Image (cartoon, rainbow, N blue to C red; front, side, top):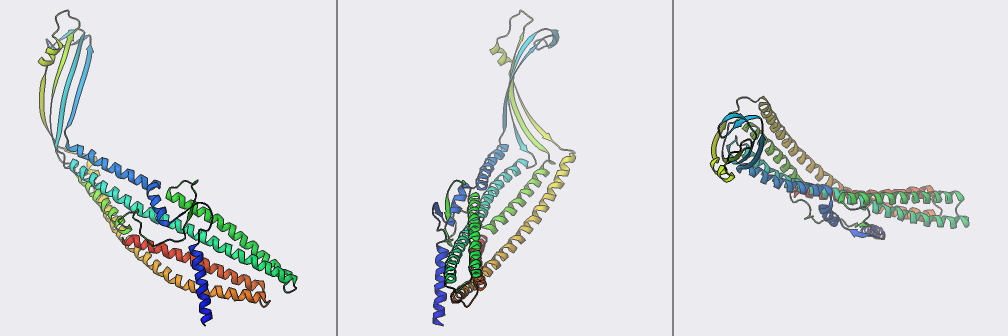
Length: 435
């Protein structure tokens, strides 16, 4: 019993050593999961787009605040007239040729517009918070995407190591079988069977090597890294948090996104209703001009004197009542519907978040239990394969028994590898929900 326990311990030590030394290939820098996530936060295209959207939202606040400011305008005009027209000096119709200039400066201020300007400003500020939350949520989602791609790359690299170990064992057994055939202990069909096993393992290694390269390529694509850059993944995933990712967490981020959508719909409804209210505005300005009768040889009043003599000022106040606007009435009803839709979507988001979180916890706990069970199975399959190999060398078992044993051990190691990685993904996912 003590000897068996020692053998199991040695098998597990060998497995953990293989797991820790996954990136055994040469060339390229070794990247940890945290490094990959940090790189993606500054280079991934979708994250960079979200940052630009956040900057644009801040610019919209300034534009919306401009609605509270008065509007100023200035105008300059010139006119050359001939034929029958009004002489401004005598205010009578004459057939003359004249030249005139006009100059004006005016301004206006909206005093009340149904709170449309105020609600537009509130919505602009809301969009800033909404864009910041969208950026944090996108960072969390990008971190999860990179983590999944990274784990996939680690899985394929580790699977490649397992396949290479199996190929090395098969080649060694082939050499032993060939020697045993030369001694008359094995027949040629046994050698042929082992050669077929070696060929199958060589195919598996090449297939897995291609899958490993594709997994690294997909990881680079998720990170926003150029394909020409060389990199290797580190088999140690670690359990640290990622400060470079969003700080809200998936649950809070998704819920805030739904809250912001509902608040924006309500503000849109208020702005649409504001179009049915009366509007009040005031304004004023100054104007002047210059006139010259080109058909007369009389003395023309100098430009400076005309600018002073023709100077005029004005002020006004305007009150406008929208009596009937069919399109606005329909838009109010549409805005009401959008509010109800946003309320239902918020409730659906809340239920989905709760369901996704519970599912992630169930998956995490299930994979952790499966890892413990598969570790025992790998240890038992390793012992069984070792004993079957000894019996095969002694001529007590056929190559078919040896092949079945080797394949069972290989499948168990791959399943344990996959389950370990899935457990790590689910643990990280639960952490993102609980932040």
